[in-house]
Length: 116
Image (cartoon, rainbow, N blue to C red):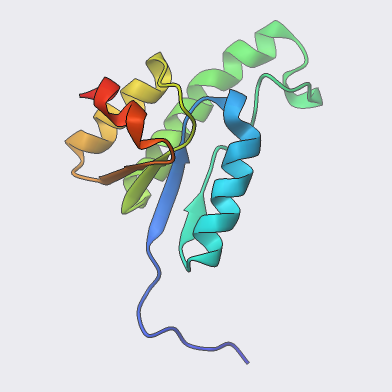
């Protein structure tokens, strides 16, 4: 039998460079243990995989993954920026989340001031 929660858990989406996949795995564990539902990048195009082994496959997949990640941002109540680097893609995700009025948190709060 499943235990009922007193309230629906908060949904948080992890954003950041895929160079921080190990940190995202840790953030996923921490957020889940805190009782949150976690949405995260499902593909790391920097790691070899049969789905994106050739450059044409990568180029075809990128826009689909970007659209999927924006849908995850829309579905989440909060965005957690993982890592100590904010690149172009992550900056765009932060701006998108801000336009939607999402709560934004950072694993490295010192990088927040670089995104204002």
